Amino acid sequence: MDWSTVHEPTGELFAPIQNSAEWRSFRFTPEQVSQYWRDGYISNIPVLTPDQCDRILADYTYFLDEKKKHPQMALLYEYKRNQSDDPDNVLMHCLGHWRLTKLFHDLVFLPQVVVPASQLLVEGTENVAVRLWHDQLFAKPAKYGGVVAWHQDYSYWTRTEPMMHMTIHIALDEQTEDNGVIQYVPGSHRWNRNGGPLPVTDFNFKDMESIRRVLNEEELRNFKPVMKPLKKGEAVFHHCLSVHGSYSNRSDSPRRAAVLNYFADGVCSNTDEELLKGSRIPKGNKMEGQLYPLVFNPDWML
Image (tube, rainbow, N blue to C red; front, side):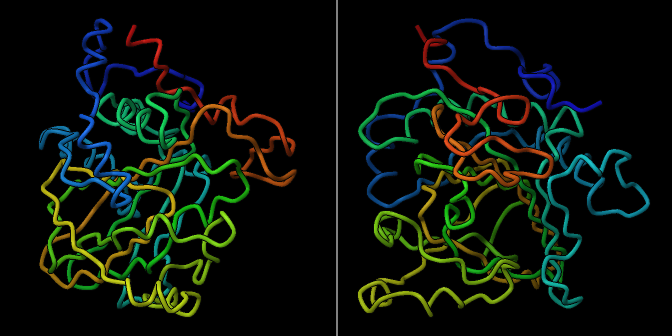
């Protein structure tokens, strides 16, 4: 089954929300919202229990173990068994797995994620309706896991506008300095080129420092990454212009993460070409339909 045809959670990952008060319980505090807009991210937010992580990791094996490959892999928008093509620096990366299993499907509707996203997508706006852009998996195997080069997410997403996008990075394993913890450059969400993102410097994420070639002197002076160690089940919410990346995993344990990308309802296509594999929306038309479900509406809290 293609789970993108179902635009509500199945109940496989979490119990249905019962009422508006329960929806409101997932809101960030004003202090958390202020921190997000100050730094461009907010980290160490618990969103999954260890048991939920373990259940999701069981489905993760479809993308890591050739013998257990999911029969509907063709539904994925992208699948790179090793994004770097270097056997000594392996990074599994895929998009679109929410279409393949109930657990990954329900993850994109997780209230601990979509309610705060509604508060953070548009600066100065208390709540907006939220749509799924796409999901991602990043897996670094033990001992020879590769890097994810410094980048801004929206650099890869300019086929949609206006820029009202964000990302939630969820640690399914504990993330430490040894296994390739995610890192951020505070304040870099204010770095732009005439209101847009920095140019893409590496589509394969393997040239860790390539972004430095496009930074100006002030940005280079302020390029001071901060590690954000995460416990299993914790997340970082980050702005689509926040510069972030992660170094290699040389530890004895894998480092696996699930990533959710959202935009505010009302974002439009900026191209007549494919947006995701098999998806075209005429330029200027609203992003909606089967692959871009509404995952949260502020009216649900009333």
